[in-house]
Length: 525
Image (tube, rainbow, N blue to C red; front, side, top):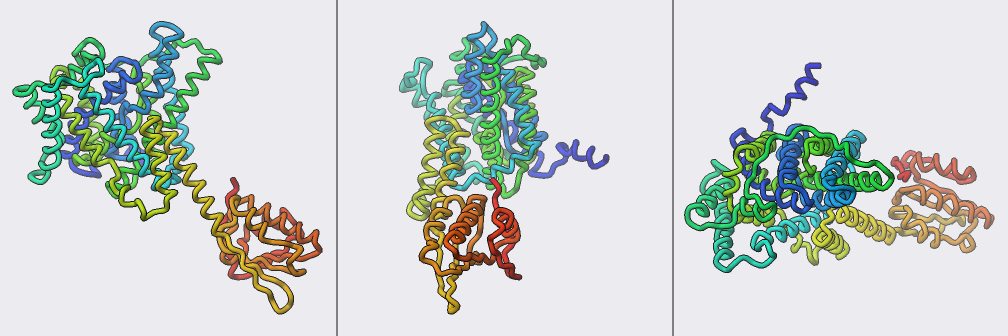
């Protein structure tokens, strides 16, 4: 019991980083969360407060109980695009029902994510190859970059006037210069926070520029950012029928998978940056609980945010305190600090995100050209392009994994070799080299000809490995072919499991047992 209580209150124990770095970094992240949460709310077709409160609940719960200290969660573009379909469908069922359908989708998605974590399926992120990871990160960096260009445009889609555009560009550059060079002078405070405050003061006193209030005014007609703490509300006005269930559960499953993939990919990226290891299954459970409560309290849900996570890590945030401070600060901004936050120039936040893009993009990708197989480059490009043009991170990762698996199967199948050696007693030994699996069994079987072989052959698997059920079936069929030709086949250097399964599948198969037989298991899927 004492250990259980200790774990429950472990969020108050400082294990990573320092209190000062976490608090200052959390304040920086809170400022950076505001414009993105507002933008993603517009993308989903809901009020900005829906996205802002989602960032609060997602950020607090995952920071306190998630599997990756220092990782920031909130409302994201990937989730906003998906849940927008539920909002649109809900509006067709009745005025004002869009939010009801949205909250139902988010709550169900949260339950799915919790089950995903409880079943310990988070380990599947380990199956993502490095080229897929590089393509994912590069695509995400480009998406973040493209999203910033909207800040340089007027509400009608045209570019800002030349003078306003020039002022904004200068402020963006100043922000980037402060972030880049201030750490060379001092690391007492996060350079990102200093940049936002400094550029905010410049914009307020000398060079007026587009602010958060202006963005709110363009989107909702009100330049104010304020709202009371939400109360829990269960969506009871939904009409449950076959059609609505198909939409709700379909969108909920997509939200759950997109959130899990994006969160676990971000977790893996931060693991690599900090040389530590997060807990994927714990993160899935925390993300699910956060989404459920987000929907219950009127939020649009979300997942890990790679941009804000990188801001947090690079600002010195390493512990859970940074994410908790960011969520609490954002809640205070919404309830009491709206007028101050509204004066933050968008140029400062755009500059911050530009630096995130520079830090996120895998510049080593260009160094791989000509140094790695061309197929790996294809995988990187495919994942990047799908991420950029379809904004579907789950699909991009799925396609990347499938392409990598097909490339691996194709290349492995080409490296199966069968070397014959005739013996003095008239028998022939075939030394098999490589992996025998579904992709190589056909070529293996075609290289053996019962009509041309002597009366007795031996297949030696000392330098090979039997990988799956397809290869077991091929060996059984091969033995049957030689039996029908009146000839004998013996097999040696098989693992005990292979020998047992082959004997069960074909009692006439002769298997030699030796002390140097290998020990491994075969895939049963």
